[in-house]
Image (cartoon, rainbow, N blue to C red; front, side):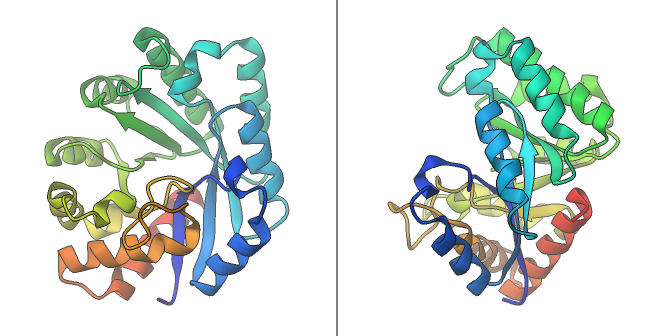
Amino acid sequence: MTELVDSHAHLNDPDFAGDLPDVLERLQQAGVRAVINVGYDPPSSRRAVEQAHTRPFIHAAVAVHPHDAVTFDDAAAASIRGLAGDSRVVAIGETGLDYYRNLSPRQRQQEVFRWHLDLARESRLPVIIHDRDAHEDTLRILKKAGPLPAGGVLHCFSGSLEMARACLELGFYISFAGPVTFKNAVKQREIAARVPLERLLIETDCPYLTPEPHRGRRNEPAYVGLVAAAIAAARGLAPETVAEATAANAQRLFGI
């Protein structure tokens, strides 16, 4: 593949602490030209920014994940707001709702999600949205927030085709990760085949959600081409076509 962008990775995760230079070498050999390195709390967001300053192909996103919404306070807000102004930050995220694990009260998740949407509006940066088993509330909050100046993306999309269409109408991109390669992910592949190519992104969400045939091992950006290939097969396209289109989409959304 001539060009790939991993639109959602966590190179800031401790799982990469021991061999990050090797991971970066492998992703470049695999044709990955850019990685959006996504924060999930103040320390990881700071690491994302620091790592983005070490390599031109790494770009940072900063936020507090819904899992940690219960700990979100004035200090966390000040930290994320301050990091958002860094020249290497290209998005606010990941933020949103997670009703699967429910590690923070739902009401607090919603409050923190809205705060991040306000920050995305103020900073004129796109927003990266986490939505797990919270489709109705996620969509309700996005509709109430109205159009955002820089748009955003529903990462690791797991909703219905109807939700995808509603998000597209609001100006968002739709991103798919490793699960689209799983044998039983028929529904996801069907949705991935029907999202307009110009609004599609691919990601690894590494070190999680490793695609086939590497499932069960640590994920890394070098595997994002497997996501592109699975979507290409579902759409009846060449993998290079999906790789190049999604790379162009990521460059457009994140301004990279």
